[in-house]
Amino acid sequence: MNFIEAALKYKHLTLSVLLMLFAIGVNSLLEMPRREDPKVTIRQGLVIALFPGAKPVQVENQVTKKLEQYLFQYEEVDKTKTYSTTKDGIAVINVELTEKVKQPDIFWNKLRHQLLISKEVDLPKGVQGPIVDSDFGDTEAMVIALESNDATYEQLKVYTQKMEASIRTLPEASKVKRIGEQQEEIVVSSSSEKLSRYRINLWQVVNLLQSQNSINATGKVKNENTETSLYTSGHYHTENDLANQIIGTSSTGAGMKLGDIASLQRDYAEPESIITVNGNKAMLLSIQMHEGNNIVDFGKKVDAKIKDVQKLIPSSIKVTTLVSQPTLVDKNISHFIKEFFLAIVSVIIVVILLLPFRIASVAAMAIPVTVALTFALMNTFGIELHQVSLAALILVLGMVVDDAIVIADNYVELLDEGVNRWDAAWRSAYDLIIPVLTATITIIASFMPMVLLRGSTGEFIYTLPITVAIALIASYFVALVLTPLLCYTLSKKVCIVIVQQVTKVARRKKRNQY
Image 1 (cartoon, rainbow, N blue to C red):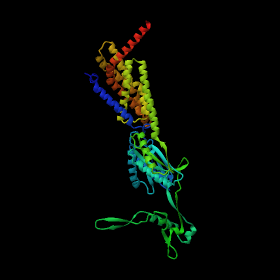
Image 2: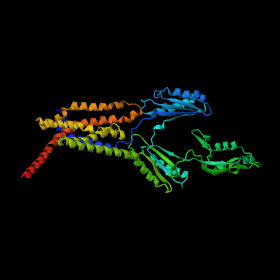
Image 3: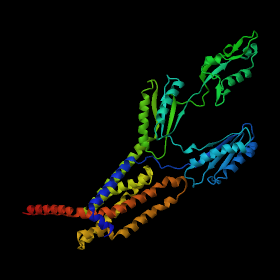
Image 4: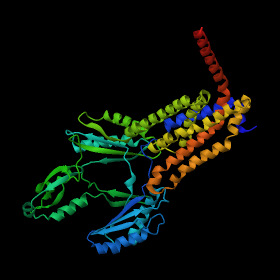
């Protein structure tokens, strides 16, 4: 007894397994990760080193060449695509990794650690860095703005921090960054005339304030068992603390405070950039998501956190979502899924209209099972739901019905040859195992050259041939197991229905003749 005949004999077990696989496929469709486009590995990065005051020749010889020699010792670095740019006081090296590197973050972290060592050993004193910038592949899942013309930047900062702290609690959240924060500063203003009158040196005041505002241990208390550090309370907390700082003595010997010779005012530092939303000053919160999660579900969780924090935010501050990848992905993927299921229905209708009813009914029932099994296998192999994988499913949809149609047609031919229903059912698939397998492999092989593509293009298109192969393999399995079972189970009932309908039509014609 072959496996097809065994599946036919134990039909209840076979149907139970297929039903379970169908349920797994439906669950996979609902739960599998979703994104708009396939993930593409970014292998480019920058190594930046500053050497203030040095000429380009000095930077080239003392910094750039040493960094290049250090970089080129790694096999992960593509020497043919890595190049450097040297200017006054700065060296920038554009580093590109080879295509063998599948997890660039591991290399960049290793490089950052090793460059710290090289700075102490090989680079001259005064070099700032080297800094490794490798965040070019980061994609913002959502960008949220807190906008208001009534609130101060400090208030915007406080409420943005609350929202940031709430969103960080999500396990799926990766980097959460505040953008547009304005730094506060205390502006100390005085005149040269006033400083001269009190015989105060400007740099003397600056050095005094810097020393008083530093946080360092000023001493230690030792005993036989412990050693405790002592700290002075030299950190300034308010403008009054700064104004009351003694900076010298007058001619009479009285202490002179900073507030006596200068005016102090709290203000914001000169901004590098100013962010406005709808004409209001604003702060932004950019949110990224860890790979492998469902971005649509992530967006729903973030929205829930935003609603919770909004209860604590005054009505004068408006929360606006500027960028929402979850909404965009949900819209695009939902559109693709609708098109996909519309294509399924179209194929079923065409099959029913163009083929005999028995063959069409078997093929139509095999399509949903094949599609569900395909989703289950995609989720198992870690293929995400995006435009390329769905496009592959739409592309291969017309092919997944071929195996079921061929086997069902072979069943009808065996019946016409006088073979009994049982033998015709299992032989319809068993006799075509090799021919159908050969056809399946041939179709898969026509898509496999796409796997050989390299670089970003290869990564982008990689899921298309893999998804096609998975769908065709699922179609082959379902055709061998389910199609004979459907033919044997449905054919008798379908024949009875057809005979009854034909008999009714014949009787009506006879009545009309008389």
